Image (cartoon, rainbow, N blue to C red):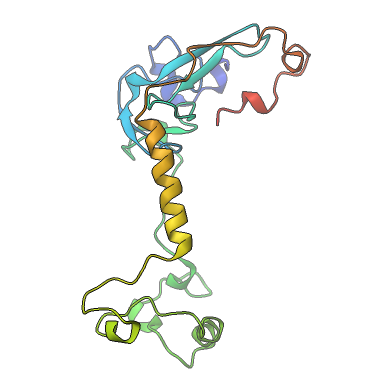
Length: 202
């Protein structure tokens, strides 16, 4: 919870019951995205997981995706609309350092095409000389493949894909998250300290 002076400006006009809670969903529903489950939903599906027996914390605003541990509007959960006032201060930049010269001036893409004699590109060529080329179109026969046939999935990619698929399964199962957490008697929650790692909503 936070006092009104700590709330972002858009909260001041918010009439929701949780307007004084910086992680509460907004009064006007909006489409959101969760950084944990990576799914989209409406903000009015965000629910409050109540905590009892704690001196400092009332609970968490939870992602509506079953079994997701995403918590907090504007913490793990954000509006999908970049122009939503809750996204103020965030920006996305597609530029990289090669798009500008040493003085910060934009560089014409035609002037930064691949040059094997340029020191930066030459260093990359030396570093990755022994790596397999992922682009084998037209050369499938060199790898024992038929034209148009994709190469086998690398082991690391297969491992990552299977882990992702297993994680996604739990989001489609019945929700096992309790609606109320009883922290009565927890010694780590009864002291004078206002915060510990359990207060961080992720």
